[in-house]
Image 1 (tube, one colour):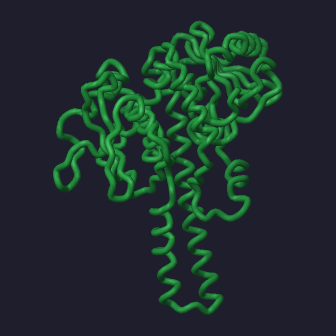
Image 2 (cartoon, rainbow, N blue to C red):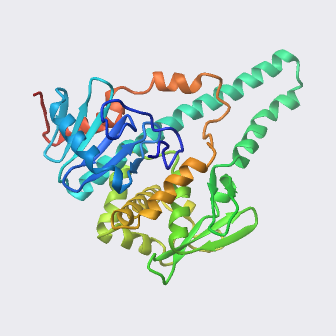
Length: 353
């Protein structure tokens, strides 16, 4: 049983409520389809659980959801908070655009808020260093270089670690990520991926291309997006009819060019396209796992366990993470808050049993 988020590599936490599945503080389940996810409370990503660990846990979640007194629900999506701290998300039969917007909206919104908070904290730290330098009697020339040193460090720090099938580890920084390209391929995957490491450019195809793209896109989308941007991204996927078809089409043509006219650069895509690309990659990976290619899911979990924790925080002072957790937005800014607001907008109701 895996206990680490396959996306941000942080512990998923534990619960003492679902005896058959004591992992996670927020569980999402679809009883009709027999699906169970552990929603990471840090990055908001949905971690699909291995098939053999689902069935009894899904039944337990359904029973707990019905027995929980405080719950909010529509015909399609329900939220319940157990007295012992576990949050249950019950998935009914939502239309796909509604479910996608609900599922990813809070995830990208949380990233957006964290980016603002961490950016402000980084500015405060740099300002503190400058003030400290003045107090210590450092020269104006040295102090003026502090922001530049900070930017250099930030651009060179490792943001993504990739594990190619051929062996070794690729450590990518911000400049490396800017060299990521997607182009069409003739295989069933529909696209290939260029990964740039310093001056070396390597093309990957097939499953490896999807796996690497799935690791890179969250970093390129680390500032998240507004609710409107998420809705636009969902619409982009829906207009093509299927996430897999979207993945193939976004790689086509001569769009997203650099200054030399070379097409396919992810960083040249509008925000909604980058968000849609990440969403489509995530859903396609999950679909393949559900169809029986469970080794892909197992591999993703294994990498989450193996990869060292890469901090996306700047020079935050000790205790800053705890401060952010303690001062995180209330119900209106949590996964539950997003669900509740949308339910109200759609005429949802609160029921107490």
